[in-house]
Length: 170
Image 1 (cartoon, helix red, strand yellow):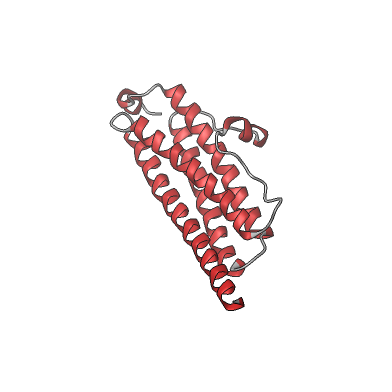
Image 2 (spheres, rainbow, N blue to C red):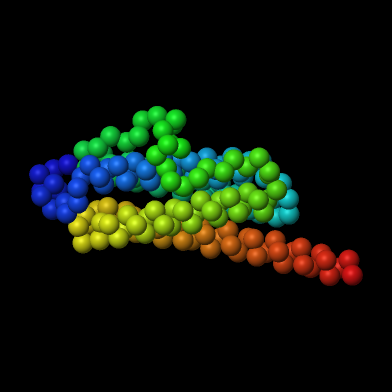
């Protein structure tokens, strides 16, 4: 990090890098959870939702790139070992052992809600103290909020589809 960047940083750099590495670990886990879930899920609307989950996976990967860039700008080292992702991250990775679409979507929804808390906390921490981290966290937070809305909409659509099928049986 440049001299001026260090001078204007209003946070403890080591603590910030630690928090960013936690977020980075969560992004890698979220990427894989979306990616593998999209590949194995089964059930109604699968073909419509699969491509969207893969898009979410790509966006999570992009978040990881943004976080790595900020860590290196701060003079830190990004987490180097995948084995550390689950140790550092607070957001749980939920393997899609039950591939039913609603189960997979609910697992992803849990992850998004955890990510929303992570980036809200990071934005709050950086607000007025580290403009670059604040901007990055706010950008990622906005996308995580969109992901949450997408998943809630799909779950509502599946519920509606099941209700419509029940009505047809009556």
